[in-house]
Every structure is written in structure tokens, then in C-alpha cells.
Length: 544
Image (cartoon, rainbow, N blue to C red; front, side, top):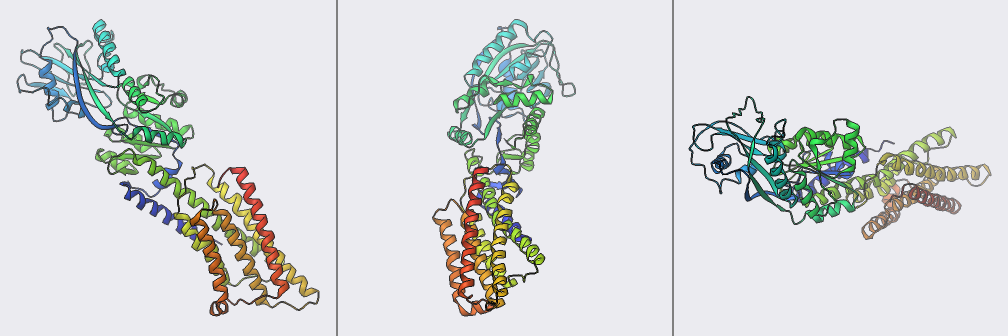
């Protein structure tokens, strides 16, 4: 009665799915991640490394300050040569030389939470003081007066216009006489914007096609980035997303309910901190979504852990890959559609074969109870049940579980399976019960008593026919491969019943004509009832 084969087959299907994904350069770090792939209905992407190639290219310098502000080239050279420089700062090495003069007194490395880095020079030479390199909106909003007054507003306007073209913008600002230390990483009350730096990112050629796939499959895409929301929105629009102006995450509400509303209303977010990424994923989950999160930086670790499915690029930080449930080994964003499709194939096929196994569980219990209450002889020998189970459930389910299946995941797996399996099991039980009650009434009417072997043989034929009928219904829509499986099982049934040694081993005998006819009628009536059940099930659930 216990469908142990379903447990085994589920494990095999998950394992085969993992092997197939490995062939596509996708490393599954948890077997259950394959199941998670099928349920994803929201995909959160970090722009860098997913929509874009990940490499950052220096674009140009746009001067802002008065000529009195000197030494900015030296400061940029220091930022580029800093051993702790992030990817953006490292792009400056080839364009600004650091000669070692005017040594740094203190420095603060870049962090995703602060979104700036700084260096303080001393020595009385040009450029002495603190230089801050970071996001314009953050650096120029440090003081109560907005940081740099009219000059800051003008710098923000210019950086905004550049960001709208899809360029990444970073500002270099100067604070004379200020010292910023790692022990007190606080921006001065007033800074002077000196230059705006722009950087370009190469959009992945497959990004638009991949996002179109998710849109067609009913998966919502959210772009969550630490960059300027205008920059993120421009890139999102270039790959076909309806991004609007982009939402500045610095204005995200703290209230969980309002945060859920914002997440539902917007698709592109910029200036997002690591903690906010985690909170945004949690807000989507509270709205009933199954969320996948991709990332390649250490700032994505919290969100990847919170998400139902964390996806890391191979170029990601070690901590990021450690918490991710799967890793794209070649870092290709275009792998994601195949990843989701494989998860859906596995779950859809497990749901399909679960109907076979649970139908057997249902009729096994129903037969045992009903025949016991009516004091009827159990209609099968154990070996006969093993024979019918193998041909109608065990062997075909193995093939069905590994076949292609593009059905979208829908919640309610167990409800759909049981709503088919229990009535199907009761139909099988009713057919067998009718056959055995007919045989009993035939004996009571003083007709020649059917031998126990003949009644068991008639019951085996009825069960086999109904089992194959259920198999054909579950396998729909029937393509060439699935039709071949059903016909092969039917051919094996006829062949095995025609081989005397096999027939003798199973203790099967050709039933009398009237009992054989009764078995045929029971099978046909039961099969038509199964067809009605399948039609009602399809109308109710709109499923396969």
C-alpha cells in the first residue's frame, strides 16, 4: 500500500535533473534546489554580472570644480592603485598614475553599505586633505545643508543626466582640512564636488532574450542594484523591461506592509544596500511569491540566504557561492531559462507519476477494506500484484519521470494528485468488486462454481486493463515516446500471459467465457469512468 517506488523515483528524478544541469555548466549544491526551480515566480537580479557582462570600462572625466581645486589626478591615481580598491576604482589604474608622492595619512575602503571610499593626504602639497570617491547622491548629501550647496546641486544634476544615458556615475569630492579615518568613517559636513567619472558596462547579448523568456513564462523580474536608479533603469529599458525612472531605495519605507506594496508596484531599484536586498526579498515572500535571487558580490550574501533559491555566478565571492543553492559555472545569464525549465520538468513529471502510485495506494486500501467487510476472498496473490504493478506503474513511471515536460508549475501538487488518484482507485475497486460479486452470485445460482484460480485470473486481467487505461490517461498528451511506452506495456502484458512458464508461475488460467466477458465489461465500464474522471479533473484544474 505504501508507494515506496514514488519516493525512489522522486530521488532519481531530482538526481537526473542535477546531472543534466551539470552538463549545462550549472552546479546544484542542494538536491532540493531542483524542486525550487520549478516554483520560482519572481526573479531578482543584480544588474552587474547578469544584465551586463560584469566588466567595467572607464568612460571619461567631467570636471566640475574651480581651478583652485588641484591634485584630483593624484587622488584618482591613489584610488586606482589601492590594494583594497573595488572593481570600479581598479579601472582608473590605466588612466591615472600614482607616483607615491604626498603619502596617505588614512583611508576608508569602499563598502556597499556606505557606497563611498576616501583617502586623506597630508604634507602641504597640492591635494592635501580628504578625497571622497563614491555615489554622487551619497557623497553630496553628507551635511545638513545638502553637502556642497549650489555646487552640489549642479553636480547632482549633471551626474543624473549622465546616468540617464546608462552610464555608471561616480563623483570625486574634496574636503579641505578634514580627516576621515576607519575608526570614524563619517563624511564631512561640507564637501566640494570636483569631477564626475563615468563608466560603461557591456550589456549581455542574451539578456533581452532571457528576460523575454521569463516574461512569457509568467516570472516577474526585479532589478535590484546598488547603482544609481537612473543608470539601472536605462539599462533595464535597453533590454526590454518597463522600468520607468527606477526607484531610489534610500526612500524605501520601513513599514513591512508599505514595503510589500512598493515591491509589487516597481520593477527596478537603485542604491540598494545589502540589508535592504534581504528585506526586499522577504517582502516578496510575504506576498506569497517564491523568489530566486542572483548575485556575484559579497553584498548579495544576505539576500541569497533569504531567497527561496540563491543563484551565484562562478566569478562570485567565495562567501556568495557558499550560501547559494546553485552556481552558474560559466557565469552565463542565458543558462537561467534552461535551469527553470529543468526544475519544471522534474516537478511536472513527478506529479504525473504520483497519480499512478497514489492510485495504486487508493485501490489497495479500498480493496482490502471492502473485500474484508463483505467476507470475499482477496482477489490476488502477492506475485500477481507485483506483476500488474510492474507493468502498469513501476516500469512506465520510470520513463515518464525522465521525459520532456514544459508544464508550468502551479501550487496545489498534493491536492491535484489526490483528487485524481483517490477516485481512480475507487473506480478500480468498484470494477473488481462488481466482478467478484458477479462470480459469487453465479455460484449462488447453482451455476458451475468458478475456480479460485479462474476468478483470480479474471481479476488480474481487469486490474491490468484498468491500470493501462489509467497509465494512458496520466501520460497525456500522448506524443510518440509516451505512446510507445503505453503500447510496450500492453505488448508485454499479452506476451507474458502467452508464455506458459510465466503463466504457471503467476498461477493464471483462462477464465470461463462468461467470467471473461464479465471481466471485459468491468474493465470497459471502469475505463469509461476513468475517462470521465480525467475530463472533470482537467476542467477543474486546467492541467495535463
